[in-house]
Length: 242
Image 1 (spheres, rainbow, N blue to C red):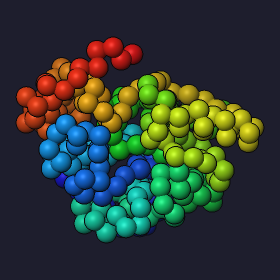
Image 2: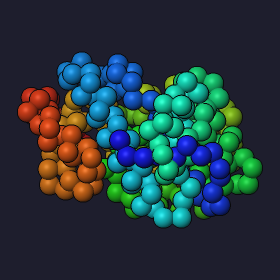
Image 3: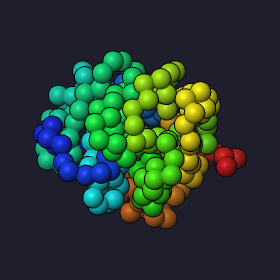
């Protein structure tokens, strides 16, 4: 795993990108994929996705990059870090609490433009992240929908404590719940392009096909996919996905 930072010092920037992550423990990450692939391989895949996500985030340039994780995972992620980004503990349990923590911690003090980004979409074009920050110029909230009813990013420039009631960005009804809360709070919402994250077998086979053509989009993940190519080739193709 490439290095992240053990420091908690804030860097001067008007834009903050927060990667929502967990410690890469066997049986605790990418559990749906672990039904079809060895759990150790799936754990290594998660490390690769997270590494490539940080590389993607850093390519934005003048953006503060942070990993936010459950308090129980901070020390492990900090040991893996060693110099690139800050690791911050969320308050409370679960992804919804984590998202609430992101904006309470980073957006509230100074109207920062803050994006919370999942840790398994490193193949996203960096231009989409840039447009997400731009969308916050004219909107209270920005959302990047996934094809399965969730969202891969959400941004805001203020803390809205009730915005993330529910299960957070990782469920099939998450987008609908988020938009309902935004309407209740009378917040304007902008959108980036629909995309897909890596949760299920068909997502992984789709990514494998794309990275065979353009491995530089997520180089560490592309190497993992070469190593596990035969096993991944036997998974459902997801050919009917949009």
